[in-house]
Length: 465
Image (cartoon, rainbow, N blue to C red; front, side, top):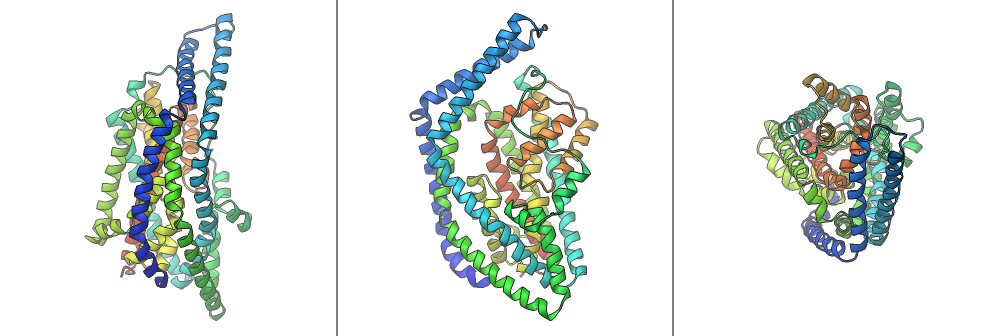
């Protein structure tokens, strides 16, 4: 894929500049819209949220749930919930033109990801030559992924116990059965295996189920290498198709600054600066945690690729910025692949390791899940001993694998984990308001983690030029 890189290098620095300008412009315009254009909706939203909080405290102090006072307050709470929902809908409707910019861009990226993963992974596996090579490289890759995931989870657990961001909340336990609006990820072997192995590869591609596409691609690539000379024709054709898809990626990436501008304008205009003040402690401590995780990952990577780790970070700055701005590590997938090859990783290693990373190595998301779960427990004054926290960590380790294709995947996994440990699922409402801001950091971290993993595996295989 080297032929594509010359053109890409010329455009890279300009695109980064445009994205940064769009990011700043979106924040400024979003702030202006928040205090002027959405003033009425935000006033209603703030008043309704404050009243709901008061009613929740009052309801928790009433023992007799059949009393007239309890029923009256419950009725008022339902009315305030509707007011809040209507205000949110009205605000989202007003900024819809801006959010559409980001949404359309993400859709264009998603139309590329499934075929790009399939064709590049098949070519990568076939070029590895035999099933022994696939097993050797796969073993090293998964060992790194599991180690990085464990480090991310443990670091999240240590930091949330050190900072204790939820202690200051002092929230009463919510009413039983409170609705969060988020599904749960169940921890069953059957569901996990069904999620791994596709019943139909066409259906997997239609739904962008990356893990299922990876499984089919591994079988297809091994079989292509096994049939000898006829397989060479398939490899050549698939390699050409991958080049075409990367060319399409170049066209799509031209819209990135516009998408970043729209996405940031929509987030800031609806969330406002107030949400930053309200959750400033949690946001600050979480981003500090991500910074520490970056240092740990960079330190681990430098043990293998030495000082070249800094050159790697320079190469991936644009996909990291894109993932941060768009709140999607998937949006940065094609560009990350190109930058890793430019850095010196062989295309067959990149095509093999990077797609696996999007199912097994979401370091930012892993850290967020322990951080958020324990934050919710602290907010309700629920003490979890060390053994329980370790059990929670292991549950998160298992339930998070292969769920990357689910919308708001981290929240889905957290919901299931909270239920397992009898922590009120309604606590997720504490995070819904700032989840877009948290998603930006964890998406960027996912890109950094997968890039370092790919470079390290390339070095271990002697394929880092």
